[in-house]
Image 1 (cartoon, rainbow, N blue to C red):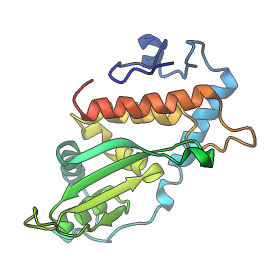
Image 2 (image 1 turned 90 degrees about the vertical axis):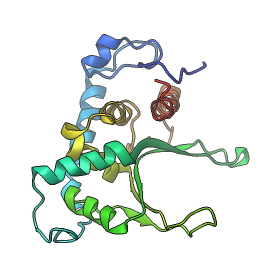
Image 3 (image 1 turned 90 degrees about the horizontal axis):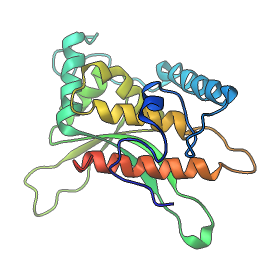
Amino acid sequence: MKLATASATPPTVSTAARLDMHPMNLDGTAYGVSQARSAASTVDEMLATVGKLKKPFLMSPYSKCTTPNEADIGWAAGILDGEGCIHIARQKFGKKSGRRPVYRLRVQIAQTSRTLLEEFEWVVGICGTIAEPPVTKKQRRRCYSLIYDGLSAYAVMERLVEHLRRKRVHVVEAKNFRRECAIHVHPGPHGHSKDIWKRREWYYNRMRALNRGEA
């Protein structure tokens, strides 16, 4: 089955069904009630652990305030909207390994100012990973990259979604990806179904299309 990359909805799943935020199988049939409740419960439980994530600085690197206000949240949303990237990272393994790809949600912001990225961490209240790649001959200044993966990426989006404009559609698809693709759910000895793997690949391509301006 060839998966579309620019379509706004997964194959055979109606737009109305997605607007109702009700999980669907790829063949257009609805999940069973127990499946839907289980998926919702998993997301709720994971969001409840946001407070347990590693915390950043106790005060702003710029203003020295200890508590972010609404203006700070709006500023951070603007940084993510204009400078950030929300995507699904896919890690492939060799054919001989017999392993399927690993898909994970990622939020990434690149900046020449490390302090600005630390300010972003302080505002959202969640530490990411700040990478410092070496300066190349084509660069005048070092470019830092703030990266959030998995649960921390989802938590950052939840903190900022009400203030986002350009990236709000990315957040919607990220939520659909988490809800419909059994992310962070251990599949047991038999693994995930083919339906789940098709969905994961579809959302990977969907996010790529959004970031390329093709959707």
